[in-house]
Amino acid sequence: MVCGGFGCSRNSLITLNVLYILVALILITVSAVGKAAAMVTDLSLVGSIIACGVFLFIIALIGLIGAIKHHQVLLFFYMVILFLLFLLQFSLACACLAMNDAQKESLAQHGWSMASNDLKSNVQYHFECCGFTKSELNVSDPMGHPLCDGLKCCIGKEKAACCMGINGSDSVSDCPCQTCLEVLKDTIKMSLTVTGGIGLFFSFTEILGVWLAMRYRNQKDPRANPSAFL
Image (cartoon, rainbow, N blue to C red; front, side, top):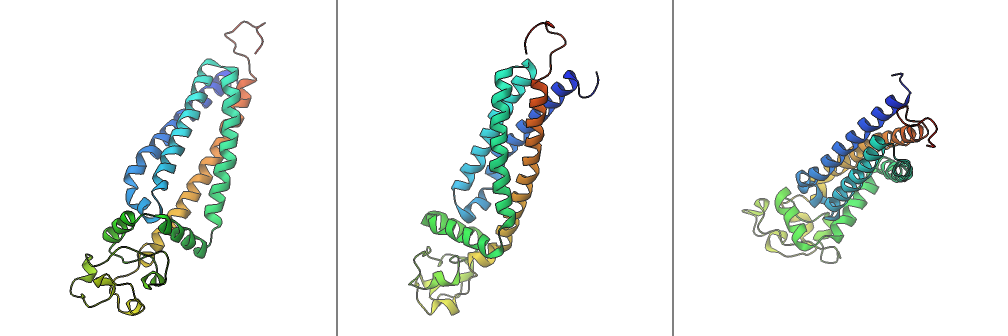
C-alpha cells in the first residue's frame, strides 16, 4: 500500500473520524465537570458544550460510515458540513483570542445579568463572593444580586450593609466580601483563552478532514469493478 493511495486515504480518514468521536465524547462529558465554571457566566454554556459535542459526534459518525463504505453521498455531505463547521469554529476561536480584558469582563457581566437569582446565589456561595462588581452593591444598579448574609465572609461582620441584605450606597466601602468579578477574573480570562486556543487547533484538523474526504472520494476502490463509475 502506497501512502496517498486508496487504502492510505481510507485508513487516515477512518482514524481522523475516530479521533473526532473521542473529542465529541470528551466535550459531552466535560460539561458535568465544568459545572462550576458554567455558573460563572450562564447555564447556556453547558448546553452549548453538549450541543457542540453531539453535533461533532454525528458528523464524525457520517464520515466514519462514508469512509468505511466509500459512500459518495455521505462523503459529500460530510465535506460540506465539516467545512461549514470549520468556518464557524475558526471564527469563534479567533473572536475568543482577540478579545481584550475589558471585553472578556463585559461578556462575563452580560452572562451574570442574564442569570437567575438561584444561579447567582450558587455562584456567591461556591466562590465566597458578593455581587459581580462593586457597582452592583449600589441600590441604583439594575443587575442586582441575592443576599450575602449567609456567606462565611460575613461572619462577625453583621453590621456591614451587604451582610444585612441591604443594597445601599454605603455598602460599597464596608462590604467585607470580594466581588465575584475580583474572585473569578483570572479564571474567566484563562478559560476564554484556552477555549479559543483549543478551538483554533481543532478547526485546522477539520480542514484536514475535508481534504482527506475530497481526495478519498475521487479515488477508485481497487477491489471494485474497474468499469464501475465512482
